[in-house]
Length: 341
Image 1 (cartoon, rainbow, N blue to C red):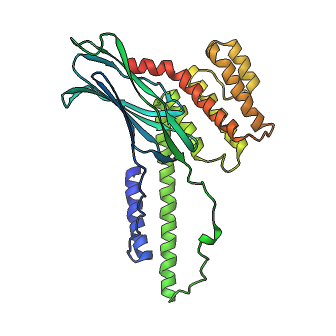
Image 2: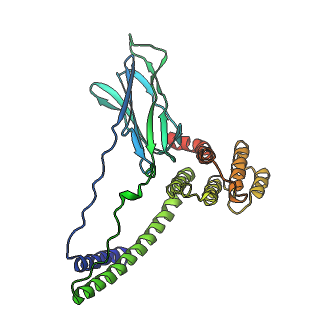
Image 3: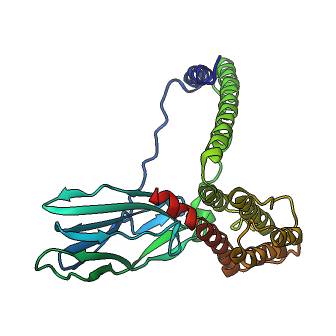
């Protein structure tokens, strides 16, 4: 029996046992709440109109911003769209799509879409965005190179754990309720055992499939994409909010070390910080411009992991930003080559 057949069989058994234990009644699905409105900014110069928009002005840490840049211009105007690499200001670019040039309402339209990630709650600024154009038409706005800029704006990321918890807002625990008959108890016991077996089997199958998918994805994923995924997973575990600072910094330093191994072929994870620094001096695999930054980052992590230094909030933010910026900068050349190809 293959994996797909096993999952189908488990689902059939689960539906049967749930029907026995619950009388066939469905469980209502909670409805999602409304989202904050989008933000749209527009600027125009000559025959070129530029629009920058995000789908939501406020999100939670579990969500992402969708940023759209749209430029329309008349025929004969040459437009150069912006390029950001792996990050935009304090945002990590998780995905990027550039649409083919098309005719829209009598003008040529160019569009780019970005999915932006952040790691911590708070206000963030979408910076001023600029496109460069040359109007080559007879009698056009300018035959020299010109620019049109859309002013930046602020978006907000909120945490689901913000605010004070009021214990009086919770209902008290109810007392035990007797079952009406022994036969009902028997059916409930059987249904409970069946559900436990089904749930355990589903959890096991899902874990195996996720592990296999993660291994396949990691094998084909570029080093900087892998590092950004690992950083996001680390933030999602909320180790800092639970006060687990040594565990957080250990994981953070290992992500950077394994990224170095995947990106530059340097066996960093198995060495101490001092051994790693010595190895970077002995080999040319890690470019010289990154060595001081990586060494300072690993030393800061060691202070928390081994000296039990209690970091402040701004130190944690700086550590996350340092890891993200190092990955973005060291991957920029590779990303530019892929884009050009």
